[in-house]
Amino acid sequence: MSGEPAPAYTSTAEHPPPAAKPATSEHPPLTSSSSDHHAAQRGLAAAGPSPTAELASLTLNLKAALRQFPDFPSPGILFEDILPIFANPQLHEELLRALELHVAQAYEKPDVIVGLEARGFLFGPSLALRLGAAFVPVRKQGKLPGPCETAGYQKEYGEDFFQMQKDGVRPGQKVLVVDDIIATGGSAAAAGSLVKKLGGTLLGYVFMLELDFLKGRAKLDAPVYTLLSSQEK
Ligand SMILES: O=P(O)(O)OC[C@H]1O[C@H](OP(=O)(O)OP(=O)(O)O)[C@H](O)[C@@H]1O
Ligand SMILES: Nc1ncnc2[nH]cnc12
Image (cartoon, rainbow, N blue to C red; front, side, top):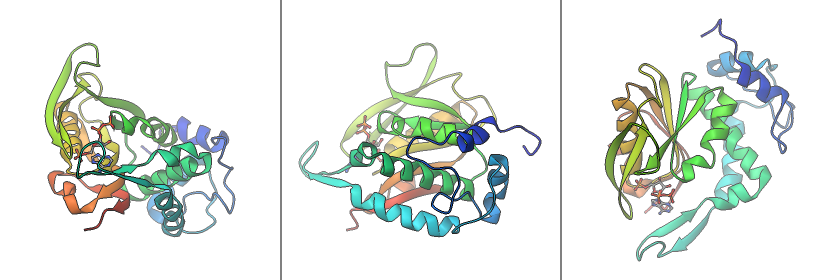
């Protein structure tokens, strides 16, 4: 890895997204020792608050933006609406920064970010670009052309089938699965099983939000990171 060029890391630093600023005291580079290799790849100086302190302040803003809708899409479900984060460019930027910080601290650099339809598509590709990784979708059955692997699953309010294209992940590639929410964990577990069927090495799972009381992470057999938690019962 160390000898490889890292074009996306460099280009992210040189071409930050519109709401982002270059590395400054407000948007500092990654500085912890565990993320030094990422910081070095990005060509950024070490300065500013620790990634842990920065993450803590970012998550406060993000949590405050969530909205809840009772009895949607069916009676008894308290629906967590993440869309206000994407409607606000500053929060959108803060979300990506928080996820990027966490991945750099906690995981090896992934080759592939696998995002789940549909809300995993809202930030999966942007995160992949920041990390210099490929983005590959998991889609609901019947949406992807060509040879696919299929896995059935149950989620908090229904059941479905997920698919991935057979050439989406090459054997041995390091994969992070990302999605907006983990509830019962059924969707994420199905996605992880597809990655493994394709021969990928599952580094772990990254979610914006976890509904802790449903204990979905117990279904997952790789490290799980959630930025925010909710509906503690
Ligand atoms: O942990 P689980 O109980 O499996 O539930 C979590 C999944 O449910 C939601 O997706 P949904 O299937 O509603 O699809 P959408 O993103 O297309 O709205 C959410 O985006 C997760 O993918
Ligand atoms: N309670 C919930 N809110 C939003 N998305 C979900 N996906 C599964 N459960 C959910």
